[in-house]
Length: 90
Image 1 (tube, rainbow, N blue to C red):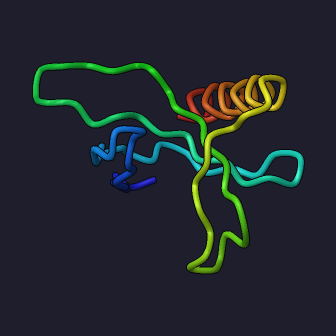
Image 2: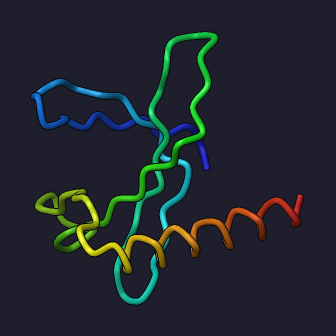
Image 3: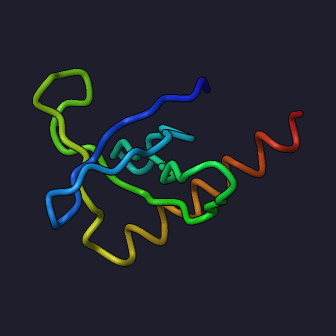
C-alpha cells in the first residue's frame, strides 16, 4: 500500500496527519489501521484502529472510533494477523 495520508480532527479541533497502513474488512465492517505522522526523527508504533461508518464507497462514509472494546480488540488482532501474514510473504 502506498503512503496514504489522511487528516483527522481530534477532540480539541486540531488536525492530525495519519498514514493509512492497512484497510481491511472484518466481520462485515471495514477498518482502517492508522499511524500518526510525527516530525522527522520521532517514531510511533501506536496503531489506531478506526471503523468506517456508512457505505465505504460513498462520500458520506466517515471514520469513527470503535466504541466496543471487544470489537476493537478483535479488529486489532485481525490487523496483527494480516501484518504477520504480509511480513511472512516478503
